[in-house]
Image (tube, rainbow, N blue to C red; front, side, top):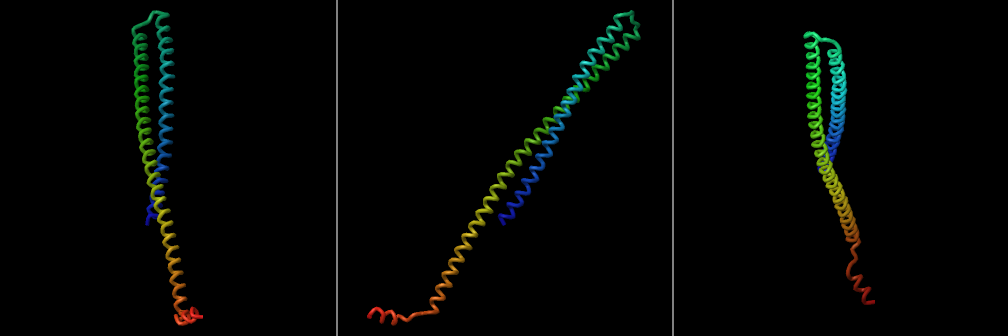
Amino acid sequence: MIADVAKIKKHRTERQARKVKVLSKELAERRENREQLKQSLIDFTLWQQQETAKLFKQLADAPATLIQIDEYNSKVSAFKERITRLSLEVTQAESEEATAEKHLQDAADQLLAAQRVEEKFHYLAKEMLREQAVKNGLLEEKNAEETAMESHQGSHIPLSVFDSAMKA
């Protein structure tokens, strides 16, 4: 019975270990995604600064029309919107990473608890087997003694033989 429970606990521990492995992989993917998004934001921000400076220089080098100024302002506004969107994506990725990290930590804690329970039941099963072996050994010893006693009872020697041997 305890051995069966120990097997079940072992299975649960193995299942929890697989879950930890999957969540660990997921966390690594989330971290990689966050890093890629951060790099995209950095790259775009640098490009946007260079592009804005280039566009401004083009406007400053020659007399600009209102249409050109509006186009410049539109492009700068679009750049800012893209930076805002990328920043939000980075923030979302950081949040998802934090959630994945918490799930992994919870699963790791559950794995540790499952391992402790498994060890406890493994120990109990081992002790029960040892006690059963001792009990079986004692039963075998007792049976051997009873068998020996029964075999001696069959060869009963009358007391008179002992009495005559003592007198002589």
